[in-house]
Image 1 (cartoon, rainbow, N blue to C red):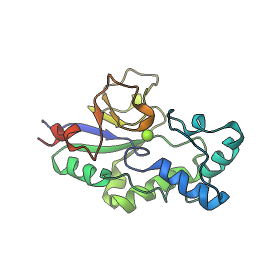
Image 2: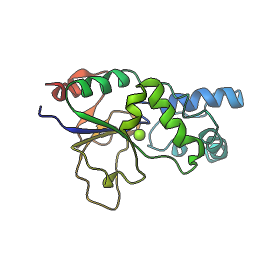
Image 3: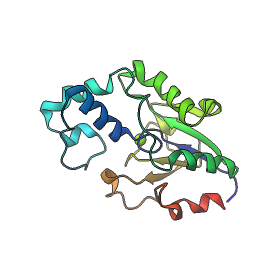
Image 4: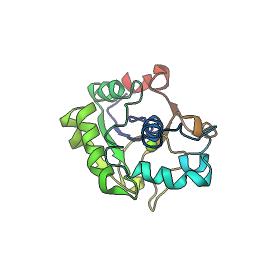
Length: 182
Ligand SMILES: [Mg+2]
């Protein structure tokens, strides 16, 4: 494939956001994360309202974003895509409670991908403003104020399986992204 501009989302594609929540929840509240089944993109929608305040507390905790574990195969995949000649960027939206989120997203990339990759971060609340050929993202619908130039490839997660019309990628299923390496 001719070199492409590939945008990789960070949470849910490179960083295991949900696992991070589970770990910090257990550590903070000494209880398991109160979720039965994952069906919605936003975790908040999959837990009872009485836990929403605690979830907000987790997101706002110093060190939460920095400590997210990498998603299986994600780091190696990003490096392989770059080595294959693509221009790979990390396109990520900080949460509203941005104080620690923004700096720790940078820290995370530096730690797990290397300091060079920090220059590849594009921070955007509205990803339709970012140019690219392909955006690999776990969010089912990515909307914004512009018509996107990229094609959305969905990163496979339990909560987005209803999205059947998008090309589906999983790092641990090499056939789903092998065409990018040719
Ligand atoms: Mg995401």
